Length: 149
Image (tube, rainbow, N blue to C red):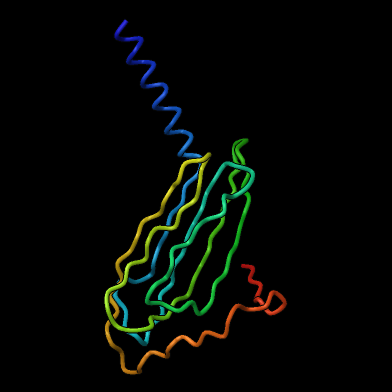
């Protein structure tokens, strides 16, 4: 009887792992130490066996200005399995010197949150003073840049 109960627990645990293995979210930065003269590339990569890619929630990028962003997606068929992927890329410029944290990006997978890693970025003073963000308000839909890779 104990063997049957243990086997049932292992099977249920295994199915739960498979449910989470179907969709993953990963984040990357190209550098963890930069100067105020540099830029930082922040990527969020989503892979899923679902037909639709879950919409990610990106962290607030405190201490950085988004210079540009791009998104690409792909569908791959291999061994009878359809995989869908998306990559979101942000080019960031630091607003000032200091230590900044980029919190995890998240997606909801079948009602459960799935998160990427977070990063600590050390920004030291460069030669030029960083330009303050000039808030011109939201970009009108007609002027939003469209990116495809």
